[in-house]
Length: 152
Image 1 (cartoon, one colour):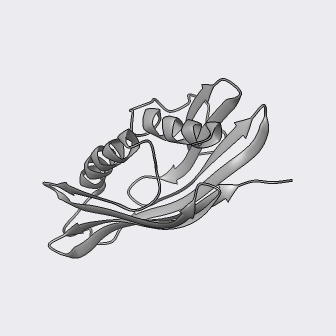
Image 2 (cartoon, helix red, strand yellow; image 1 turned 90 degrees about the vertical axis):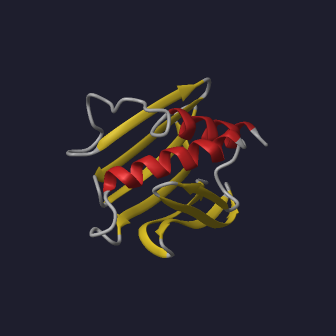
């Protein structure tokens, strides 16, 4: 694993999943921003919304953007599931995934509130994926994501 990929996993683990607080000053009107820095790398997760949301993660190396991911997540069955439950399942599932020192490659996690399933193709240099939560074999939450290296 190279330094960039290691940093991405660390940033993801300590930001949203790790309970990092949002930046007092958002980067864009009405955005929710979470920042992390270590050595030459800096990370920004900036998103809009709550239960249904859209966002982007960017990593800079020495102030040059080198990697990004965008995502759109939503509750698909609001009668059976809500944002609070989704957050609980996602935080525990991703925490377990990041302990494996990765964020791609497929992952399943069984939680009392629902089954978390992540499927992706590619590696951190270029990828496409979807995460879902199922309750009684029905999709109640879904997040689509894609990203990879940024080159001049």
